[in-house]
Length: 324
Image (tube, rainbow, N blue to C red; front, side, top):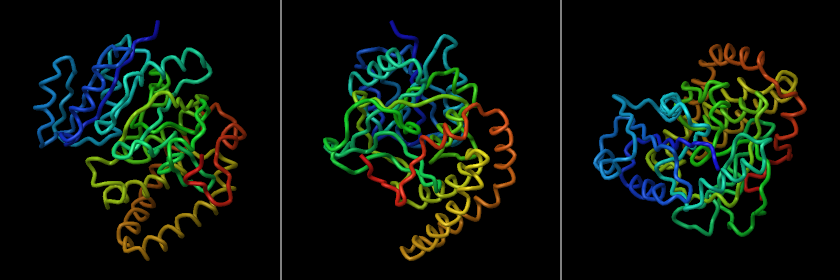
C-alpha cells in the first residue's frame, strides 16, 4: 500500500527521552521498514536503552558528527528499497498514526515530496511547538504557531516553506538529488537550508496536521536559548540566505538581511548575549567564501523560478512569528 520507509534518529546523550521515542515508534499503525539510530558518541546510558530494542539498527560514531552530517550518513546507509526517509528527533514522541498520516498525504498529494508533522509541546500538549517552518524575506526563520494554543491554528493541510526536521517525511530521491543536509551547519537551521534547496530543485512541502508528534525541543543542547543553540542558529541564518536566496531576490533583499543582522546584534547585546551573537556573526562572515562557492553550484542547478520562491516567503512588514 505504501512505499518502504526508513526512520532515522540522530542521537547524542538523549537517555532521558530515547525510550519514550522508541516505544512510540514500535506502536505505529504503519510499521517502518527499518529504524536506524545513529549515535554520535553518547556518553550517557543511550546505548543501554537501545539494547532493549533489538530491531533498531545502530550506526555508532566515534565522535559527535552533528545532526546534519549524522543524518546524511544514515540516509546513505538506509536500505536500498526505501522510498521514504522519516526523520525523528530522540526528544520527539510520535502518536500512533504519525507515519501513516504522512504517507496518506503523500498518496493524496503527489505534487508534494516533503511532509511536515504537527508538533505539540511535550510538556504542555495544548500548546503548539510548531506547524512547519516559515522563511521571512529578511532571512529570519521560525516555527509557525510556536507557543500558541493548538486549537487556534487552522487544521487543514497546507503548503509551508519547509518542515521542522524533528519529525518529517522526505522522498529519498529528493534528498539524494540535493545532497542532503549541509554538514558545515552542524545543527540548527540546517533543516530550513535543506528545505530551501529542495524548493530550488522544484520540490514542495505539505504540512499534515493529523501527523502529530510531541516535541521537547533542544532536549540535549541546553535549550533553544543556550549559547550553543544561539550561536549555531544565528551563524547558520546568514549562511542559508547567502547560499539559497535566488539572484534577483538576493540583491533586492540583501539590505533587509543586513538590517536584520545588525538589529540582532544590538538587541541581543542589550540582553547580555553580545559575546555569543558577535562570535556567531564573525564566524558567519569568515565562512562566506565557502558558502558563496556552494551558492554558485546551487543556483546554477536550480529549477524553481524567482516567482516560485517569492510566493512562499513570508512578506509581512513585521514578521508574524506566532502566525496562525
